[in-house]
Image (tube, rainbow, N blue to C red; front, side, top):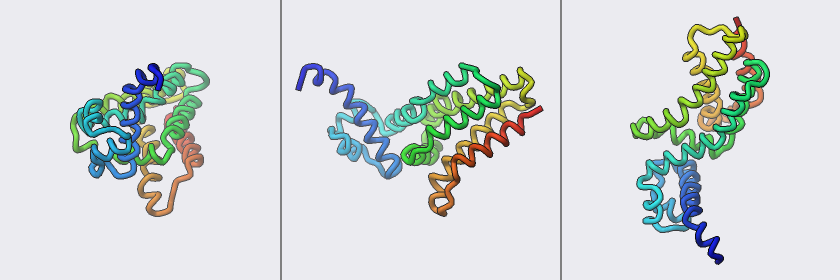
Length: 205
């Protein structure tokens, strides 16, 4: 093994542990996953996992950061670019969000987050500050932009942003849980078209 490979190994080890944790949380759920299982899948010792992540909750927080923040910069750039009408930008944002969250692993991990967020107040605060509020602000920004250009009319920006964000979350949530169990999956493309039409119609002056 080269000196370069040896020097890189500690940094890579943390990523390998996180990847193992993401996979196991998605497969087994947070409660059923043991740190020793994560260590075994990552090919490291139990103590090594503890060196990088002090608790299993810390691992869950890191998984959320990777899950949500990996693409957030791209969504922020899309909104900051301000290209086209506010309605067109809203459609782009909804599609980008849906495409990012459509993978089976992402959907299952999101279910883990939903199941555990009420059990860990610190984790809930982390999710709110790192994921929910930044995403909501993107929708708020586009609604305000549309109002300023007289494309939209809205006297309750917060509720409208919540509705737009929440109805997209419903798509992922349903397909990962109830829809899968009942064999009634929502067609993502058709849902996004209906979501866009409803959003624009509801915000139109």
